[in-house]
Length: 538
Image (cartoon, rainbow, N blue to C red):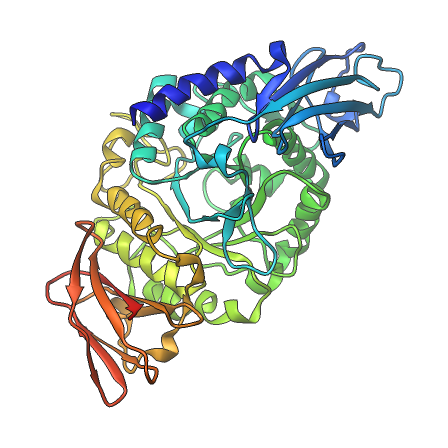
């Protein structure tokens, strides 16, 4: 751990010296600044294009949008993927602006010996034809996110650093957060908003300059940033603060593209819309926005985060710009919710769709109800990762996402039964146990697993539902068993297995006693509580 945080200091120094030395590490943020020769009343509209064409040492060219950063300052950010000398040339729609048009430069990209996968293995991708994410070098990436919607807006620098260190120590690798005012935070900690206007909008560069520091820190801790570009909830208190709901299509696209330009040099997974309805009467709007923002080559992978129990697979699986088909299973542990996770449209329809990464981006929040504690978090999470080809999971706590401090309440939300501060919530059992899940899954070839309910000789419903996944060659099987039970699996002739029971509460293993009878493999849990049965071909 000491080596990791020594490296944090090295990254900070390297990133802060990028402009002066014209040198940056591979996969790190390169940034350069331009001074406009003109002042504009509203740069978002007055300068329709400011882009930079980067040419790699190999000759490969990449064009990225730059962005306005207040007064006459413009910037571009880029994460280079080749070591050597890069060149660039700018292009501006205002050809008379000598400060922005046809500016040229070079910089050096160097290799770094980083302990962090985002720098040693590269950016997160979704290879076509697969159901999971990888780094640029092909290493599978098990998405393990913590939901801190308000974290980047409300936290102090010390709080943010403490939180990120905790998430790293607990095996999380993604931080989900909002990037503008929204129903949970009408301003940031300085009382600022990201933009004003509900038709023609004006950006507040000072708001984003504060946000920059928080996004920098996410990557500096080796974590992937997952910013929500357009919070989209269309109902309930505070909906007037949801830019994805009330902005016209053009302004929604312009705002999202600005954010992509501003944070595209970071290691990111974009969440285009947060908590929205993207089907039925809103379907064409969101397809227009998605195509408008991500219809051309762009940095980062793209996710959709729909409202609770809204499945958008059939409508969006054929959209080329979508990499992650997110879903949200709801904030309760009712039999209806259990059935939606285990036997609902996500579990039954994924196989009919083009391959995407299917991820539950908002399982039940720990502490949101008296009945939603660590066992309910584990149930929803393990059922989810085995209900589709395994790709990842997200954790949320009712004190973390709104970034609660003692005495505070959640804006535009009802008063819950309990509201712990964020620093207590990160230590809740479910928070720790989702970290155990990530550590556990990464010890196995999780990316080979797909649902295999048809192999179960018997099963039960609701709280006793057993989820089974296996690799195509049946060399690895995993079964999530939420209650003490005997797992019965149809066995393949000539194949035997060695088994273990994984305890998701204690993060421990014990051997599983395997028996075979009439072509059925049987293994019985020996203690109370939920377990994961791991079978490896002998």
